[in-house]
Image (cartoon, rainbow, N blue to C red; front, side, top):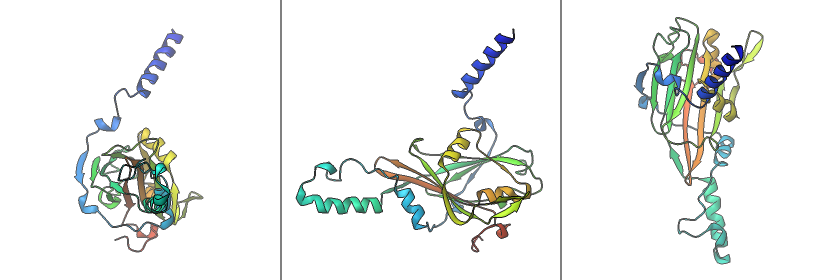
Length: 244
C-alpha cells in the first residue's frame, strides 16, 4: 500500500510539472488597470546598452536580399559599415506586457490582487499605489509578455536604484547605478509562482527598486521592454533624487 501511494504521488507530480492546471495565478481574481499613464523616458548607461545590443541577431540577408557573406570585394567596405551600424543601432521592437501583483498574505495589497497592463515599451510600477502599508506580509510579482520572447534567447537585466542598507545584520539592496544580468534567477522565479516579496521593513523596496530590462532577438530586430520599480513614499531608500 505504501508503494502504491508513492507511485500515485510521483504520477501527480510529474503530471503537474508538465502543465496540468496551467498557471495558478490565472485562477486568481485580479483587478485590471491600464498603466499607460505611467510611461517614462529613459537614459540607459552605455555599458548596459552594449550588453543588451550584444544579443542582437541580424537576419542572414541584407535589405537587398544578398547574403552578407557573399558580397563582392567592391562592396566589402560598404557592407562592413552597414554591419557596424546595425551592431550599434539594432532595429527595436518594443512590446507591451502584464504585471501580476497577488497577495500571499491576506491584506498586504489591501485585499486586492492586480493585473497591470503596461503599454509598448513599458513603464513605472510605484508601490505607493498598490501597497497600503497597513499590514506586513508577502506578495507575488509576475511578468507576462504580450508577444513571443524566446525562452532560450531572452535576457533580463536589472539596473539598481536601491541604496545598500543593513537588515538583521545583512546587507540589503544592490547599490546605485549598478547593473546585473539576472536572467537565470528571473526565469527560475517566473517559471514558478513568480517573484516572492516581503514588505517587512520595506525589504521589497530595497530588493526591487530600479529598472528591469527584458530583451530578446526576434526576426532581425531586438525585442525589448522595461519596468521601473520604486516607492515614492520612501525616497530615503532610493538612489536617485528625482523619484517624484
